[in-house]
Length: 520
Image 1 (cartoon, helix red, strand yellow):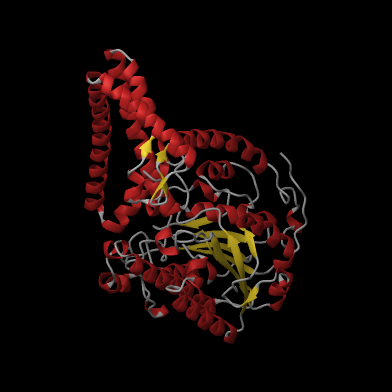
Image 2 (tube, rainbow, N blue to C red; image 1 turned 30 degrees about the horizontal axis):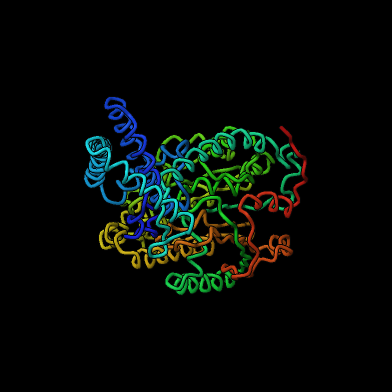
């Protein structure tokens, strides 16, 4: 069995497995009792490798990477929650129960099958010995000469390779944990005095916004790009008329297809947070996040608007947020849009009413997460009059008339089309909010957290996401004039591409922060 969905095909299953030949030789040499025990254990091991293979296939399709045996079990609960939001609780429970039964049957059937085959070998030991010897010679010959069937090597060792790969992955994960703890203790700005942090942004209302799944594919894919590019062009002109200007570039995200928190923490911490263990390490550290810089300076009050947070969120301390508004604290009475708890336009209006529009003793630094472009991209909200938003009940009709998640999930072309529409909606909501409520002192930094899943972005898509900085004050953009970013909201194809973890230090340096390293 291949490790990716795209490699599935009949030729993959018409191969000669070297592990089976070795197994047959060992079973033929054993007495009955140890033979049965080893056969049953071999069947269980075969089932376990098959399950791991399935997980690898799913993770590569949705997250662009293989399953990590140490770190990724917790994500299965997130996957179940996502299905419940998208397909409903009854369908999710039925699918979960069916999957559990399938896995149990796989283990039982594999163990039974190998035991049964070992008994057949024992009853016909002479014939089985000759057959095993011939198969071994054929395997060695095919392997030596690279014999292929439909472009696939006839001699297979997939199970051994999978086992070796999983073993190395576990070993590398454990080593990475220890090494990353050392890296996280070193911080170029960790000891910088408060008065030397972002002095060139003093007096500005800073807003850092993440748009869910806003990736390079939205801007350059032939299906999604026409609509998204038109929206970016229209919104660039609208902002220009309102006195705003923008510069845009590319960042290479530490995650792909999901696990948005890895993208958030990578861009804000200046560390490459590419897995759950690294995330836990960073969250437990005193490493200075970009948002916490503003709190540490003493010149800003800080707040987070997190409509996707629906439980306790201890990360608030790491990000230096005085107050966090979660999904239950924004007064929303309308319907959920699949996974997204509320439309982005409503989130931004509440941000205005509760935070940005109020008088403060200090400027505000806000982190805002927009979720309407989260998969499965059905149904998608539509823009309504800003004065009509109320408590969100206005969206009931829009949600009811929208696409059903199951219909979008089942159709690849439709998924790509609806994904593009969701990005258009999120960008429009954010830039209309800025046009409507922004001031001469408002500075907006917005970016994607990761590319959408492979079914939408393609099997060989990059991990790049767009990032833009928008401001009225020309001095703000002049500070990044040497970055080579593109004017407007759409980064050019050849605009600079940085690894996402490099953004924090370059941003701090551009706006006058003085490095004072803190070493572990």
